[in-house]
Length: 317
Image (cartoon, rainbow, N blue to C red):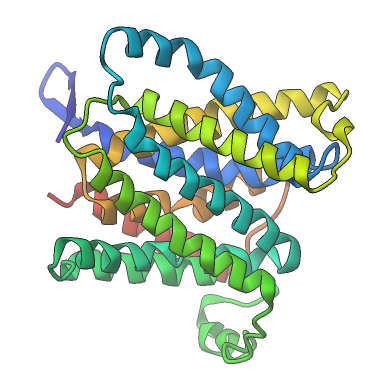
């Protein structure tokens, strides 16, 4: 595993770079929900995907061309299927959120944390470790608590009574919920597929991200054109939209996909899924400080569960 050594006067501290990069990815993805919602005020879903990943493709093109000339991206074809999966993830996730509630979507999409170890177990033909399963369950439980819509007046002592009001057994599944479940399954497949296809291949994480962005851009543009959407949606005129678009392209797309592609080469798919699954916790923190939203006691306990699971996964050898 890659380590970054930081020298101090009295001791050496080793930081696991793949895990730190994945936690930063979770943080940036957590901020993306509110920013994306604001950006969609100025354009449509498909046009937004085209713009976001189009910017990503343009920014990464010089790096990919340089590595291609140096012979460092000769296996680029192996990244194309992962780009197709990524396109399906974004389509399922965004349209799913349109038809269901944000809290239910956050809970359902986080099921990828639990799905990944089992998909990995199928491909590797071995059972997932007990620790990974326990960490995934703790993270999933935390997401559930974090996304509740209950009142903030209850105390920890009333936790059991709070669960009675959550109505756990009344899940009315609609097409939006099924779309989010599909996105969660595809997220897990994306992580495992990337690990499998790119193992031992000559292709950097940034070149992989570039190929994926190209596939998503072209795929979304094709769907946009064939769906008779107004062409004006591809050219928003508001400055705040473009600030949001560049933020999402640089931090939530380029860095995030680079970190995920980097992470799967240096750790297991299960840990990649678990660490990026801390996204709802960081999203709650962002909403609290940036958007002024408050968390009740139950939701704070949920965020603590997710962060505890990610810390234990990071420290686990």
